[in-house]
Length: 472
Image (cartoon, helix red, strand yellow):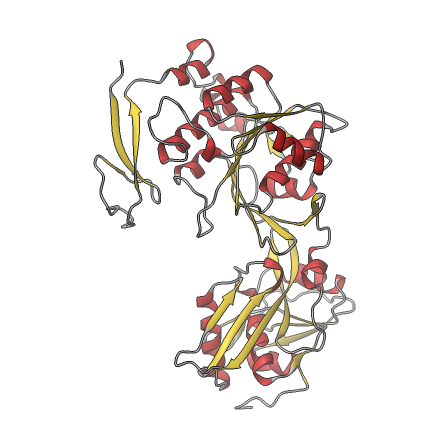
């Protein structure tokens, strides 16, 4: 009988320790070391999963010249959902393993159910899809599929939590895609720890990854998230998979955003927007129009900026609100972008333009559940706050894009032509851009381009009526 080996692994950074400690010596997080029990010899399940007891190293793993390997094409299978394929880089790669995370009830199971149905009924190459659920019974999954209109004979459903039994189903049926809902519910009976622990999640994911690489069958995992929004379980889980997708959005709103955090077979910059309805998720074909829907035309505190998400530009509304504070320490509430970036912009407005914001509560909100990570939105954020503070609306057909420096100067942004073309497509007639924009954009029909050197110049060009700025 094999001897058991106990060790303790940090769920945050993956640091291993021979004994339990209250504080991880590597990342200094408290109560993150979790026990893992393993056998010194290779467990029987790993030998069963390897055909005829052979080595788990596939024949294709024999080293070859890189010129030979680079010339091979990676076969992909379309999910039948155009935007889903875009985020994946063109479809699901054979033998890959991907992880989809998101808040409970956000639509992860719905998305994969619709993708499974689309693959099962494809006209050119119909395929068998195996959906194994550890959180719901097969009857519950079937009820959801019927509600979505996703019933098909090649769409196989099962309820299983034992990873060994799940692997046997996968080997016996040889589907074209396997969906595991969720990885935290699977367990290996040869490990003593409870389902969802570090050792169980890592061990089960490793066996599924081994199956995917050996058989060429792609495996999609649904994962839980923590209260901070990051994927639950050990970080090694993200290293085992080929792609990590996050499904974001507010359950109180209909829009859902799918983005890639990691993708070994494509870009991590692409984004897909869906709308949750009575019959499941539908693709939002014009994201800019959806994000700008309901925008007030005459109200102050509203600005439109352009973001680059992968290869396309999106127009997003940014709202700012400045209100006199009755607190000793005025509030700074930010939703949809880095609060430190907003605090920096407020400091620039107060120092360089003389706006007295120290006694004001300031609220900044990115509409539609979008999250801004690039500095090209600085100008829109700053002017939305100024518009509210001075109670002067921004010209509603004006696009604002540019990075704001600490001296109040405007700096260049990338992909300017794509941003301007998207503004024209959405009916905007004016764009305020940095004068230092590097390569000058070509003349855009129907769009008046105003080049501003400083934040003050941008204010004069966009506020209605023209504002009297202190220091002017």
